[in-house]
Image 1 (cartoon, rainbow, N blue to C red):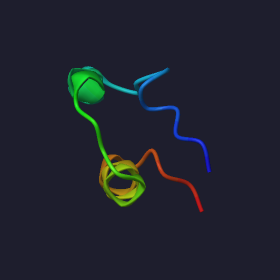
Image 2: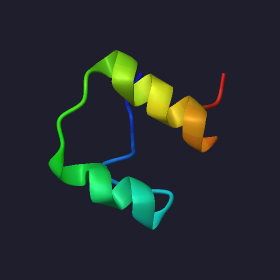
Image 3: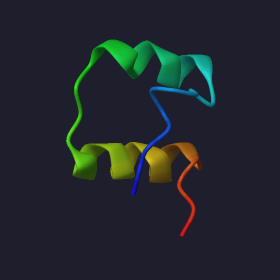
Image 4: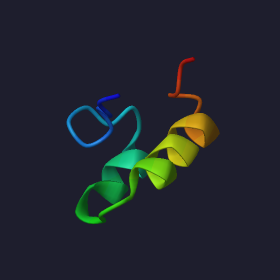
Length: 39
């Protein structure tokens, strides 16, 4: 699954994460926590 968080941040808080490298698991956790993740 491609994560679009870095390309199209859904909110300013997520945009602040752009300079940090996350693992796929971390990105998924962030997606779920932010409500951006869709099954």
